[in-house]
Image 1 (cartoon, rainbow, N blue to C red):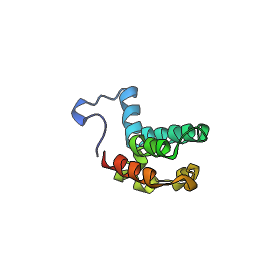
Image 2: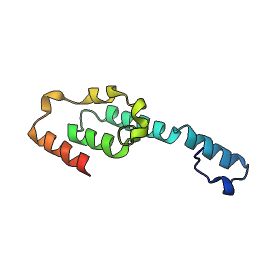
Image 3: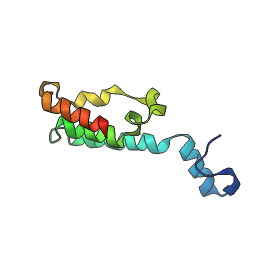
Length: 99
């Protein structure tokens, strides 16, 4: 089993156990997803579609790492103004994905 701390370096301290549990449950990815969602919700009117997409694609591991594909919640995209999708947005989207 893969852990954040190599087996040879493990000691049974509470901190090391907690760090491994946190890593194994992917709590960091979950918390990061929640923070990004909250930020987008709180700033929805001020953020352009491309800014929202940039946060999602660059910083949210659920939409970046294939191992989280079962945790994707498409409700996050409800905040997008689909009436404002134009050629510039599509080009920006392609550029973000190319990074």
